[in-house]
Length: 275
Image (cartoon, rainbow, N blue to C red; front, side, top):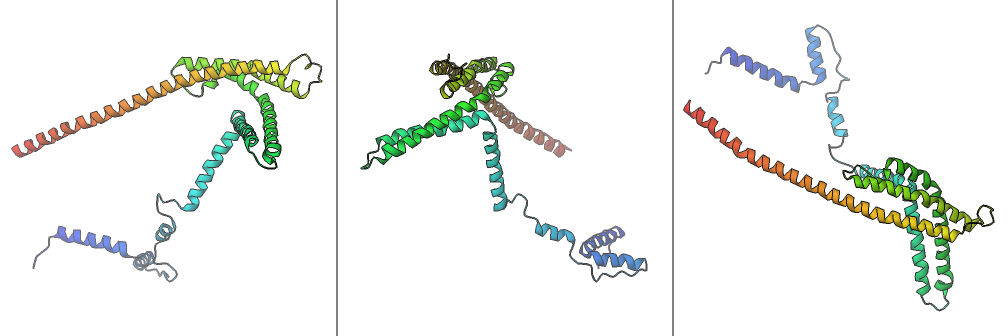
């Protein structure tokens, strides 16, 4: 028979009280408190299950995504990209341009198809050629929105499309915007001269010549954009190499710290043994 010390008995009582407190339901715990204060508590309607347990069961596991949630997130991402694309005149014009030249390609391809009644050559090819012409007119109309953006780009340099360390990129961006300032009015006059040739102020202009000069401006814009894109790619490669070299230095520093930590532990253990 072992005699426990008062300290051990107090520790055992504390452990038993803690364990019993965890097992006592809420209503019994309240009843115990009411018994002490000579009050009567009705626990018949009180649930023995803690309310937190129901909440945990109803909630999904942390980090788990249901199929409906994934579908909703995919739709949100799609609509976000769609509205960003259609909300800009330049990207909308690119989409129409893609459909336009696809229509031209189909019209040329339909001419090459040989059938007995000539359906593709006589019907399909002219339909897609007409669609090509209609979309071309639509693109001319959408260019009426381009002149204010070109003026803003010449002032602020927004055609650069981001922050770049190479100042030549910003200079080329402003030059591209300056080139587009005469491009848009030339396109507008050419379109008006083709569609409304009887207007008095348009009779003196030749739409084909105006379109040729606008094409020259566009050619200079494309060449400048190529040079700017090359400089951007060079800077991006330099940033990538800097990130890779920085990660390598961090790895080398972490590996160099490990032997130092092990040597320090050996010194501490030897000092403890000496003591």
